Length: 63
Image (cartoon, rainbow, N blue to C red; front, top):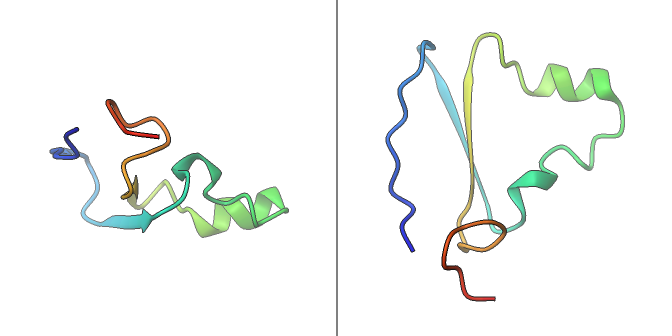
């Protein structure tokens, strides 16, 4: 399994979010859509979300 990546983007700033849980669930605890959009300002920042246990969609992850 490889988690090495290179990211090129047009933004000056990147926010790295590392979680041991399923990265697809990021924001699930925030029920209001407007609050989610305020939390993740995609217009000014690039976001990289990593589930660092290597599960939840990572190739060759052991379950």
